[in-house]
Length: 234
Ligand code: FPP
Picture (tube, rainbow, N blue to C red):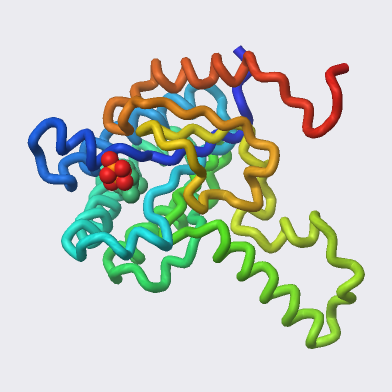
């Protein structure tokens, strides 16, 4: 099996999973957090180099306050519960997105997770929090515009590589495979710049039911894809 170097996941369907079981939505997010443990472990064991998950989008603030604060509480719990094992597995945690508006305990937890794992050399585990693909592109454009205005950057030297260097994913390869659970056929502002040539795999399985076996099925499907990057088959 050819294991993708970078897998990115839109963890959708928590709410529907909970509803079908007669539970409140937050129970679905909680089950989703538990599944994340198994998926991170599986990616680490398979030798995936980068795993990126969409934990909270810039649009998710529109949800009821109770659900928003519940997701951030889960994030705090996730770090408290998982950090030791992530350390043992040599996983390096990084953040994509602007964590400034997060509740202070959530901010503190994720910064601790990043700081404590910074020297690890195994799986790079990116957690996208308060992340939006368009916001990331605007942020990059603003930074380059500032440098041009200050006279430290020649606008003619701006190319794709320079633009990519301003993304949260600066030193990482683009995702080879983007998985979306929960069946919706869209990218929802996830990795807008980086997804240009990603293979997309959508499964109806809700995120809390997405087991390592389901992940392996997605990787097998990826293995059957013919990636041409705009060229023709050699
Ligand atoms: C989408 O499902 C899921 C989210 C917006 C939150 C994802 C959060 C977790 C998996 C748990 C916490 C994360 C970490 C990193 C600890 P949805 O609520 O939109 O599902 P629906 O489409 O069925 O309503």
